[in-house]
Length: 99
Image 1 (cartoon, rainbow, N blue to C red):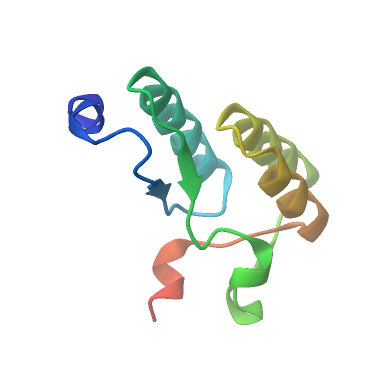
Image 2 (cartoon, rainbow, N blue to C red):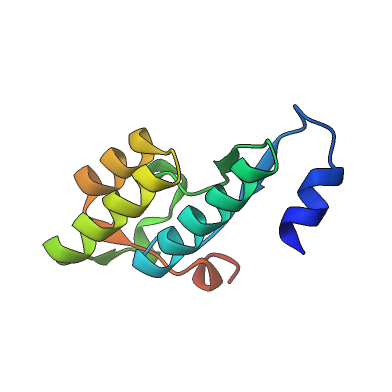
């Protein structure tokens, strides 16, 4: 359904993804980026940069988790974000950001 919706969206219209800043969130982003690419779009991260995230919501991440986040960020086409998350070394659940 996601691909069908994106195919109806005019090319050039920005498509954003807001997900958890953790392994699962970046796995989902990589999957959605693959689907979006098939529909002629590139998704962009929304409020997922380390500087966007409050200190009180950050959880220190293990090196393996950071490596997988970086891998999935690259698969999503977000190399710069993957590097930034790796340098920051933390994860955040987006549900905690709405509180």
